[in-house]
Image 1: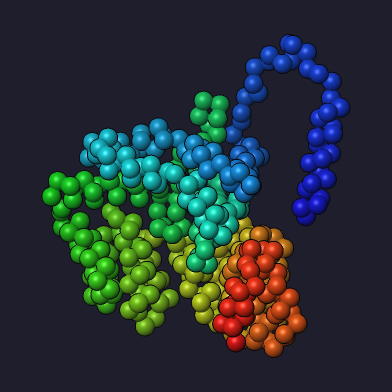
Image 2: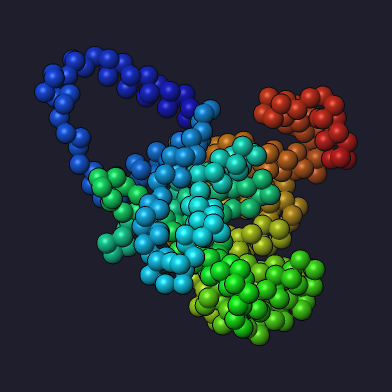
Length: 368
């Protein structure tokens, strides 16, 4: 694939070189007007993807793709949020949520992967879906709304699969919570959220789950409720999936449920369940080789090592040869007692990740 891409790029350069020099009139023509269409939105998304997937990543290109003025305008419709936006913590929260490029670059630098998955039109709105795969083996999807602003395509809203809410809703809740806390005027809802945060820090997940399930109304004002609920049921629930589905009672978006089903099932041996979840997620995200990694993990857990290796091979054919894939392959070869392929895969670690003989020896020792 890389060779084909290189040939195409060389051909493009040669063709450009054969073009005649533009006339002064042509050179000074006004820039072509940008249109809002699926094609232009896809081109925009690929440009952002490529800006960080190269030897000289430029995260600011993604950061600057966010129309901060549009976000501020939406947030300012709430007078209390508007007054806090200009305070230090308000600006920090806004910037922290919109500096998506920095988050992406950090994950890639740590061995993760970033991909533009799909774009679509819903009514008059155009959307792009990006995927992050972090170094913990977790998959994160974000759906961004793209609009035309001053002849430029800009991101004007977002939806986080992790939180199950719009980006402006998340930002507003964080600003409001911090504003109330700064003024020492926490209302009943904010006090309950503060209690939940304290219980999480103390590791009292059972008590935390009880409070969360008794106060589902918090989800209307605090999207963080969903994440704390997930933490609680991960540690204290006897039936994670059943308790996860209870969140539907709060009206949480289905994409949130599916994203966290994917995370859960990749740690089990339930291949049928994870493939059902993947089939449902693809309707929102488009196909993505990262799903093969998650499926391979499930197959590995089920001791179906040959099948797992097939899925790892499909994954690395469509995305970088990530550490997660490499370690998964090593374990499969070890479990199959295939010493030749295990050692060959292990040796590849030198070129792939710059590991030395001592580091490879430690990995081999741990694999026994």
